[in-house]
Length: 253
Image (cartoon, rainbow, N blue to C red; front, side, top):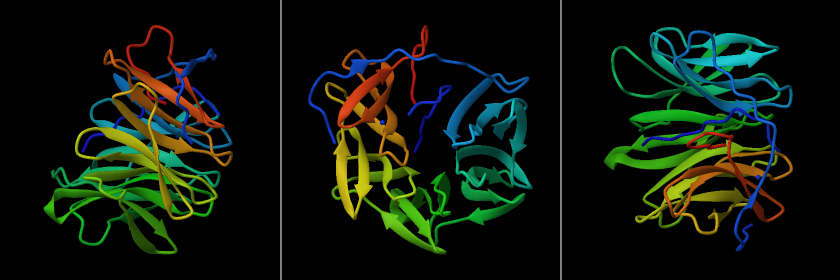
């Protein structure tokens, strides 16, 4: 399953039935030196940004204090960093050994720890909160995709009822989880809070995904409109706001 999360802006995102408002922000674009392609996927409260870039292969990166550091587990063939917390712990995924099997990882205190959901064929870690709880997704037998929550050393599978596939993308310090699911006909976002799932669906969209949630329960993601164009979205206090980098063809947040 493929995912996207392109963001080059720091933004503060249940459901609103009106048309999403447009927002004006100051956008800053950036690329790691020598990169032909880059994605920024996560940011913490110290403005440290993680993501991935392509330059003689695919690599994760950390941008901190204006300096780039490559994030790549030892022996990785390709890697990508997706999420980080205020303790500078970083999560993501990588491949190794010439295979396309995906493994998750957490980088903490300079050491990498491999993450593999038991019984899965692929695992990717996508978000981590300040308590070290990690969310992501895994493919298990029958090619079913489940989200997961790793807490206290134990994995809990996450599955939106009735969905064909579920991906958990972000988690805040209240253990609220956001992500996306496919119900057999279209992709929609979700919020998992207090054990209950709430669907997130931008009004008028044909596709909605939620990628990140902060401690104020603001949620960012993207959506595709009826004309087929992808926009970023911010959901805050029940209202969706559209995010578009000026001149961009697509803007996931």
